[in-house]
Image (cartoon, rainbow, N blue to C red; front, side, top):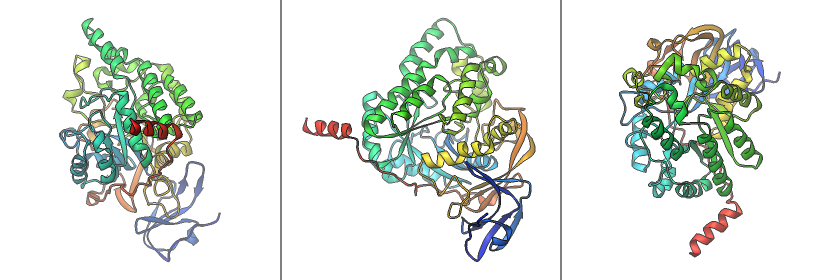
Length: 476
């Protein structure tokens, strides 16, 4: 094996582990200096180091990139804040998060973005901030880009925070504004009008049981929304990302859009892969999440979509709430979502142990693909010379049991309570610094996280139809 060599002296060498990429697993040591990976290779090829760590018997993975978290600050800090949320990420082997804009105030203006960047200063891990794409903030899009957003979020369906869904006309204009900058637009792809009408009918009929939530959001709401967004992206050249894919039916639309050349990616979450409709009977209002956990055949389809590459990545939709907000009799009054950033890696590594994914598949889904999709590759998402030393060292044989009392989020209630398996992150490094070591949070690393404002923006030429449209608008 040819070694990749770096400088004469390193800060740290990880010795005796197996380095995992999205394609290979190889025995190699890893040397780190000044926050970067400076050598990957045989022990004799490593530079002298200030410190070493023996990770024999363990695997060295690129730190997970969770492109979908809600840290609730400002406005809802009792549910989560940047210190607690990123501590949870560090404990879960996650080294970069992308945080959503449905806070109070929402991240819809340059001033709101500046405020959130200040509030993120205690972060343990690196982070990107989403800017909002809404009906009433299109004039702020350019300022949000200048201010350093990593991506945009468009809520096509209602969710926590009750942000109004933009019209298709506003979405089109937003896509036109963002496309030339190359930033990806992530979509909560559910059609608001269908859901509002169905929920109203169910409530009028006296339905407030957990399964009523599933009935109010049939898969067609996602199919229609993804189809519409893909057409707008095709027309404008915008890069889009479908968040929290919950149904097998969406995958046909996703495949067709990719085949047409649309720059579209998609994610699913552990709860859609591990739960089905039985969860509404077992867990009641605790399982309420948008989009909903669906019937078993959807779960089967999602696993197939992961294996064949239709679904590009794993994210969590980490959405903390208090127990009182989650455990209620009336399903319509239960807040939607639950924690996930701390448990994702353990849950998915347990599926690797069961043979449902390979370890290389997991690296692709959790690190390499999100790094590529959001412009962070090759700085992140890979263990190679020159990349940030964002690393999760995992013990594939170490058992775990998920317990709310052990989690680091403020709102700890989780449907995964009591789940067990094998595969645990034991060390997490962000740009070469331990933020979790030997399963203990390194509290001195508070504030080490930084904004990924250096994101590689990839401008695209405007398609001919967009140029014609803009010419028409100007002439009118």
